Amino acid sequence: MLITYLLITLIVMFGHLEDFLGAALLSRPLVLGPLVGLVLGDITQGIIIGATLELIFMGNIKVGAAIPPDVITGGVLGTAFAIMSGKGPSIALALAIPISILAEMVISGLFVLRPMFNNSFNRYAEQGEYKKIEWLHIGSGLLKPLLMGLLTFLALELGDGVMKSFLDSIPPWVQSGLQVAGNMLPAVGFALLMNLMFNQKVAAWFFLGFILASYLKLPMIAIGGLGIILPLLSQG
Image (cartoon, rainbow, N blue to C red; front, side, top):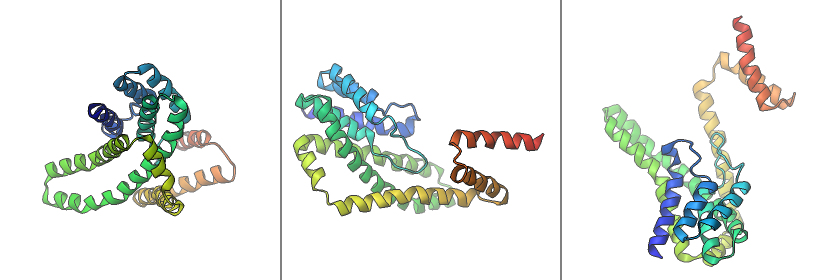
């Protein structure tokens, strides 16, 4: 079973390497589920469970700095436990959602700690050590795949029963605190972005979009269309 667990761990790490590969959607349950099924010798169940979880997590995407539940770790472990227990998609769904929320909490903690590398980046930049910047960038990017791979392997070793008991034992105040911290990250990210971009010319467009969305209730597609049309009209 050790080889099987290691292969499933590699599948999770492969999913989290999408940050290096680009948004190719290789991290979706529809892709990773069959891979888990292939490793466990039941690719049919892998496809069925992967497709079921894809329907559940179809809207689970990153928007700006918002961190959604980790569909990669939750989906892979849910599929693996479902196939190994022989209970099908029902147990996969029951485990995938809480595991994905736990994994999201771990990722939120990682994103809070990763800015500690900023001083090293600045020091290497001042010294002109561009190779060290490249390696530090790659190394910091690999932290998430390695951390989630470790979490996956431990979960597989402990088994689905222990994993579910652990999830149920997390105090509500811990979950609430991590959720609040995770919700703050998008606001900080947008504030940093606006600090770089905000000026007198951009401010007018920003407040125009806010008014259109908040008071006139226009959908984002309509606001985006106006954002393209109005500059063209002003140039004409």
